[in-house]
Length: 159
Image 1 (cartoon, one colour):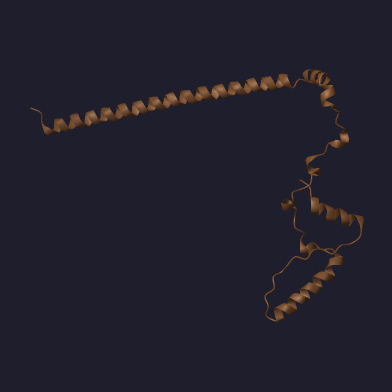
Image 2 (tube, helix red, strand yellow; image 1 turned 90 degrees about the horizontal axis):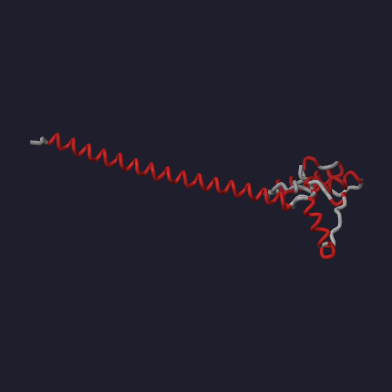
């Protein structure tokens, strides 16, 4: 008759066969999913190629020129002047991107105001009040170069 050891080995072999079949089945399902995804990727690539070809046909200069001539009365298009084109660095910055002027780089004319405010902060500190250091905007000064610097701070550039 069968011994208990034989029954245990039969059980282990059956369990091993079941686990092997389950793993094989899962691998086949994953392989089918991979093939499906590869087919979708190929379809998308083909669609992109088709759209690029369509765009190339739609944006041909000869075709666009014919359309402009056909609809000239309705569109009233004019050629773009070369002075209307600007570089990206010529566009103004957003106000949130404008750099804050550094107090240490203040001009000589603003030094007097800085010294006076520093004396006031020292007096306030001596009285026991807590004073926070506030950046002092430079005093307005004359000169074309200084005005250009002030304009550059407000609008800035994209460099």
